[in-house]
Length: 119
Image 1: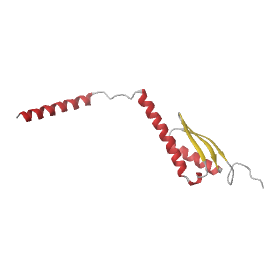
Image 2: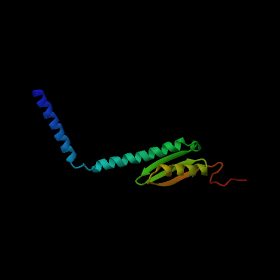
Image 3: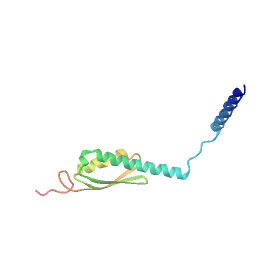
Image 4: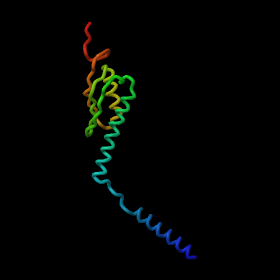
């Protein structure tokens, strides 16, 4: 009988603790938690864009840097053609979420480049 009383006491105690926990207000994230989640989101966006750029075969001969600052994604570096530049910008926009994409990409030359060709 003692064993049953102890089990019943344990059940009542656990049940009370659960009921108390359900009635407690939700804890709001602190400023440090918000900053950490913002940094994680920034790193995720940057990583997603870099990964997508590396997967595109038309950008194989490109040197592209991706920087995320606040609500902006900035692309810089060199691509071989105007088409490669447009592809990189499109990929960045597709992976930037709500962030704006700024491009400082330079076209190095070759077919489809921005440089006029001598004939």
